[in-house]
Length: 129
Image (cartoon, rainbow, N blue to C red; front, side, top):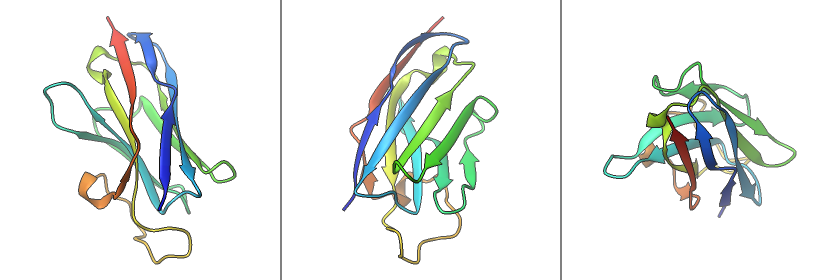
């Protein structure tokens, strides 16, 4: 079972940048990603990465502004947030699918929360206008 610990959230002004980190223990899983949820709103997929080949998928609302990446040596995924907007304010959650290294996981990662079994506790991002 993998444990996920997020860090790097905080407050930033509109147009600013910050980087979120999510460390997986004991190791990264096949598909890992970021989801977010703002008060009164449904959970929204942000970005997902296939950790073996680095293929990424983004929500249209963040494409071109956010970048997801994976460091295999650190078992960590990152989310670079740039050109931040007030509507990006939310609790950001790291997620991992059920497939550990060596498992026959999917070759394509889909930004669908129900495919992810493991979740971190979240890190808050607040963007002020």
